Structures are given as structure tokens and as C-alpha cells.
Image (cartoon, rainbow, N blue to C red; front, side, top):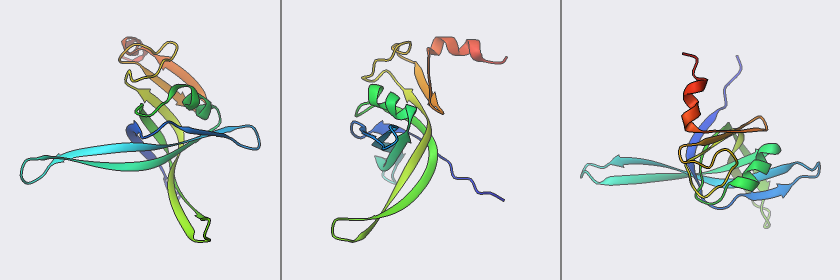
Length: 145
């Protein structure tokens, strides 16, 4: 039986995405994504627990990220978890865990401008390299019932 490796995250970019071009001409986008869980402790005080995730997208999705995402952008990400190792400048082995994204949805109004998705309550989705934007008001038209 095959295993399942799937991560689903909703969070905010911790900094502007880093965009690089690979030898084959494809682009790669890297950025930290913060997810925050809130709960009340035994004294009734709200406590926020923030986790940071290293997210990587390749190809056409990286080009959309380059155009539209900035620090603070809210994002829904689906992908797989990958841990890799590398040697630092002193020869020490380091490990990094990343989310290799395959789908994303830009959430909220934020500081982005996208054709067809400027209004508050819109979502722009990229899946398998295809970009689409839809207004929330149109969502009811897509329901099968």
C-alpha cells in the first residue's frame, strides 16, 4: 500500500518570496509561511502559537507568486512534506524540512492586485500551473445544487 504525503496550510508570508531561475529556465519560489493557532491557557489568557514552514513552488506557479505575493499575503497551500540535507560552509550536515507546493489559493484583499480578483472576498487559485481568479459572488453559480 502506498503512503500519503500531503500538507495543507493556511497562513501568511513572513517575507517577500525569493525567486530564482533554474538551469532549464523554470522558476522556483521560496518563502516562509506562518501558521498561528490560538488557545486560552488555564488562566483564561489567549495564547498564540506560531509555526514557520519553508514553502517551495516550481514552474508557472512560481511566476504567479513572483507577480502577486508579498510579505503578509494570506495563502492557502497544498503540497507534500520533504526533508533534505546539505553541508553548510563549515562542512556540517544540516537538515531542512520544506513544503513542496502543488496548489495555492491567494486569500483576502491584502496588498495584491490581480486582474479579475481585486474585490474583497475574492480568491485566486493556482493548480498544476493554471491560474484562475473568481469573485466570491460568482461562487454560487458554480455549485452543483
